[in-house]
Structures are given as C-alpha cells and as structure tokens.
Length: 84
Ligand code: SF4
Ligand code: SF4
Image 1 (tube, helix red, strand yellow):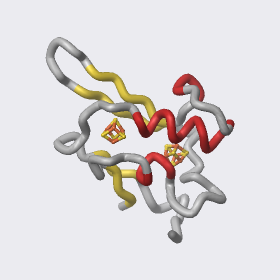
Image 2 (spheres, rainbow, N blue to C red; image 1 turned 180 degrees about the horizontal axis):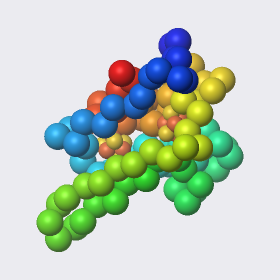
Image 3 (tube, helix red, strand yellow; image 1 turned 90 degrees about the horizontal axis):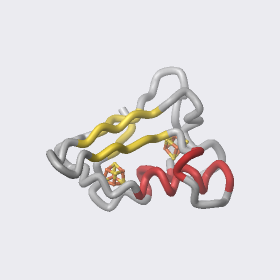
C-alpha cells in the first residue's frame, strides 16, 4: 500500500465501528510488539451507557511505516477504517 504521509488521512466510519478497540491493540503492537493500548496512536472511547463512540488518532501515527498495511485497518473486522 502506497501512503502519502502528507496528503493521506485515516477515515473513521463511526456507523461501522463497534468500539471493540482491536485497533488500539494492533497499533500498540506496531510500535512496541506488545499489546498496550496506552501507547497507541489511535484511541477509542465507548460510553457503555449511551453507546456513543469517540475515536481519535494523534500525531504519533506513522501510518504503520514498514508494515504491509496499517495494522489498525488490517485488524478492524468491521472495516470502519480506511485511507482517504
Ligand atoms: S477495530 Fe474497528 S470497530 Fe473496533 S474500535 Fe477500532 S475502528 Fe472501531
Ligand atoms: S496507521 Fe498504524 S500507527 Fe497509525 S493509528 Fe493505525 S495502527 Fe496506529
């Protein structure tokens, strides 16, 4: 996958997102080869009372440099993430 880090963005489709947080786990694995959401570039907050979901991606995201595909996208079974 060819990604232009200046022009491309990760698009989050909240209508598809279930709040499973697999993307956080996958992101931390990219950076540290461990499963630690606290160091992830992507953050998922789900309000269990209302079901509202908020996702943000901070500036540490490197579009998964050296991976064949951004891991957050690769392991999102809901296909809620895409590159635009
Ligand atoms: S892996 Fe996909 S469905 Fe799960 S929280 Fe992340 S964006 Fe949402
Ligand atoms: S593209 Fe890679 S570094 Fe960026 S949020 Fe997704 S998993 Fe994390």
